[in-house]
Amino acid sequence: MDRGILSTIYCRLSDPAMPEAEVRNHLQDFYKNSPFVRILPEGQFPNVLNVRGSNYCDIGVKADQRTGNLILVSVIDNLVKGASGQAVQNMNLMYGMPETMALEAAALYP
Image 1 (tube, rainbow, N blue to C red):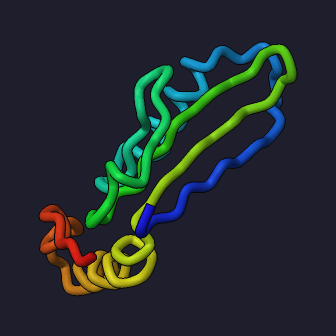
Image 2 (cartoon, rainbow, N blue to C red):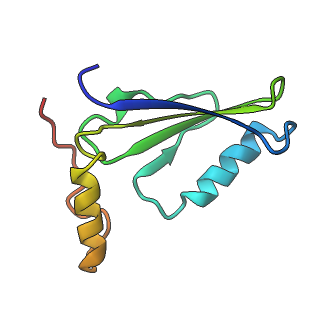
């Protein structure tokens, strides 16, 4: 791994019996207007390789009914999404341009 950040977040479900599909639906609804956030399908977890050179944040979800814990795994390319890509995204919004302008093509180095 030469670039990227992978975060694993653990938290308690407010309802330990909440199905994983419902958690995923809540996340998809929350991020529906966020063009660079992708909630992965059931059973899939993100890999920094899949966001390398991009402004995307991929999120994987696992609800563990046995422990009542929710496990979220997220990845970003910190050389793009971490600062520069976020700055371009904010500038686009400030100047009334499409939020995704100049951010959909992957620029790689290294």
